[in-house]
Length: 402
Image: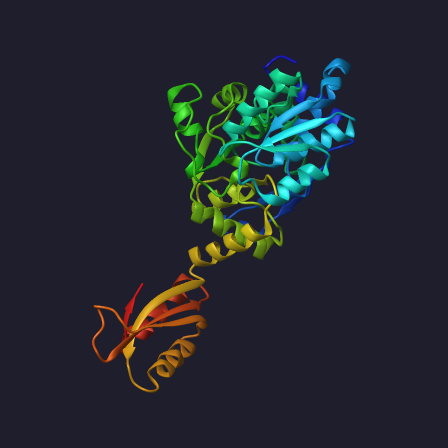
């Protein structure tokens, strides 16, 4: 296959991966539909085999290796999702696989990758470090490098998702796709634009790892100097040459979302859709929540993956609760008298807030001799409710600080 992927290539890819990749559910989201004022659908690739869309491209690429290439084995670099796709594809085809992962890659992704039969090696802080190590391994051993996004077969395999989107939501107007290196976005854009050029295709990146806006402005892939995001699945510091060209020519826009937005989106998907999705996987939902009026409906938001460490899930949920105004941390000055704390807690309870934690501070230059500072963490219903709690305490004469 040449680097120029066509609609026929993507249709052929679907036949090739039909026995391995499943056709994931397309779920209507009533809560998002109500928010944006039109139908919104969730394409649930978090329910795909290996927990993400990556098996589509990985299996297609590896299945097309020659017998001589298969005998040499394959090597890949990944923060986890591509790793699992490569490991499962290789084991299914009876091929030895080695995967280089960045230090700090999620433990469940590492264990799953090993469980699918791959040898795992940790190398470097970022995906680019692991990719360099994988290239060196390929040169040293003869193993075939299975790039996570910069290959036509990978793009064609990921593009099969775009075929499903058009078949399942034929009147779709906007498709939002989480974006790292660009393989998924490029493949989906090619599949959709080849049939429906009127559909708006939007890539969504984490603000702390957004390589595409600057690269598109420059006209060529430009590496980021550093990255910082919880969304490891889309933390890619430099676009691939092959997907970059397709994205430049076929994608309508790239939108970035903050860590707070990702947290709120993950919490919303867990609460409202009852789906477990990793931070990268909810990037499209985050964009909808950030600007509900920006996207014409019917809209499809791709949930690209669901491989999240339970410990991180707990942290992100707590962060999302805080971002949504569901946690409130206050410092309140109260009289250093018997019953002073009880009076404060009574007012908090009457305001409808739930006390999670209380601590006293008696020594501070900002306190008068007859005062105590109480640090209090509360559970509230919303940002509006949190402001009502603050206002009530101030009306009662308390000095309240954030």
